[in-house]
Image 1 (cartoon, rainbow, N blue to C red):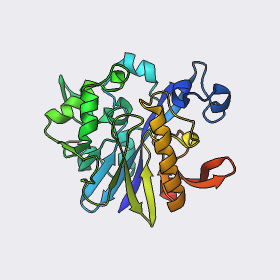
Image 2: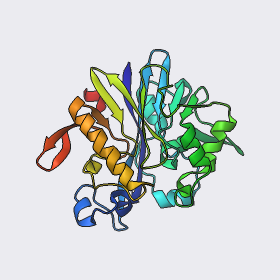
Image 3: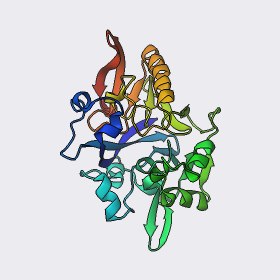
Length: 278
C-alpha cells in the first residue's frame, strides 16, 4: 500500500464560525484572520494505492460553481486536484473509488464536473461511496445546513449509477480501509483509516479539521450537534493517544499529520510531520 497527500487548493471561512465559542483573542493565535475575519483552510485529500485499487478520500470544492459562489469562499493557491494527482503520476481516470466523508460542498464538490450543459462524474472509472443515512440527510436537508449540500454536487452521482453505500455499523468498504462514523458535525460522517508502515492513519475530515481543534471546547459553529462532537472528540482522542494514531488533517493550512501526547492541560499535538515523511 502507498499513501499520497492530494492538495486541492485553499479556501477561506469565517474564523469565528470555525472555532465556535472560543474567543478570537485566543483562536487568532492559531490561525490568524484577514481584515474580513476570514481564515485560510486547506482542501487536503488522501489517495490510497492498494493493489489494483486507487482510492481517493474526498475531492475538494471542484471548479464548476460560478464567480459569485467562489467570491464567498475565496478559492486560492497554486494547488489543484489534477496538479497534485499528476505530481504522483496519476490522473482522474486512474481513480477506482471515491470515499466521500460527507457531502458538504468543500468535501464532495470535485465529484462532478460540467460537460456543456450536463453534470457528469469527474472520475470516469470510479465508484462513489457514501453512507446511506448521510445521503438521506443531505438530499433532504434541514434549513440550517442546506446551504452546504448543493444538489449539483450530489444528485448527479446517484444518476450516474455509480453510487454505493457503506453501512453505518459495518465496514463494507473493500481492501484494507476501515471506516469510523461520527454524528456531531453532520449525520453519519465517515472517517476512513488505514494501517500504513506500522501506523494507524486516520483521516479526520471535520471531526478535527485542524490541529487547532484538538482541545475539547474547540468545536465549530458549523456542527449540527456540538455536544455530540465534543463527546466524539473525547472518545477518539483517548483512543488515539492510547494507540498512537497518526491524525491526517483535511483543513489545517500548515499541518498535514500529527501524533498526540498527554500534557497538564490535556491531550495536545506532539510530533508534526508530512505524510511523505513517515
